[in-house]
Image (tube, rainbow, N blue to C red):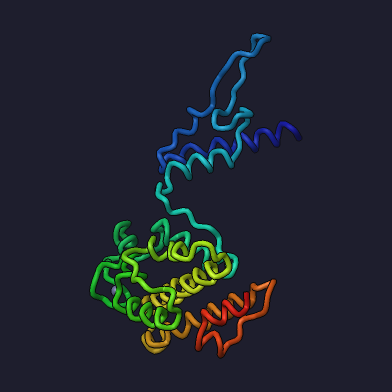
Length: 245
Ligand SMILES: [Zn+2]
């Protein structure tokens, strides 16, 4: 039984080199041969200090090698759902299936923006450069007055809370609203890309969707303090946030 398990283990490890070739990872070089005090040889895995092969050590190595290096570190915002945090992480690493990326790998024959059809659909264009996003962002800023300056790229958008240093709760709410904007624009873009115009909804409702979704998300996750009130949230959200702290 023990032999069968070992053989199964080595069988699965033996399948790894061809799989890793596409990432240009030379798997076998991480196994090093050394001499034991008793004169026998032993193999050790160089990516882990214990010398034992682990999937996590290999995964860490591949991530460090393949993921883009940048200052794009995304800190999880607890006021919005996990799927929205994941969208933010993918946006910060430019890992979204936008038309520019799909065109580069030959999946799409066009790289035009699915919302405005006027420019190349990069990640920055979807959330920052597209006229539809700009219009929605301006409306959101009118409502949530702390989002004043228009960002020039996604990283500026994702770092919007830095302007509110020192107000932890307000920072998170501020960021949650920005994340609501990100989610609403991405959903609208996907609907435009995959559905007919009748089912995509109107671009004029995007600011309202940011307002209502962020309200629902935040209220569902507030554990300490009073919940936000809808009418006050719509009329003067900053005053409502300060009043509830
Ligand atoms: Zn566009």
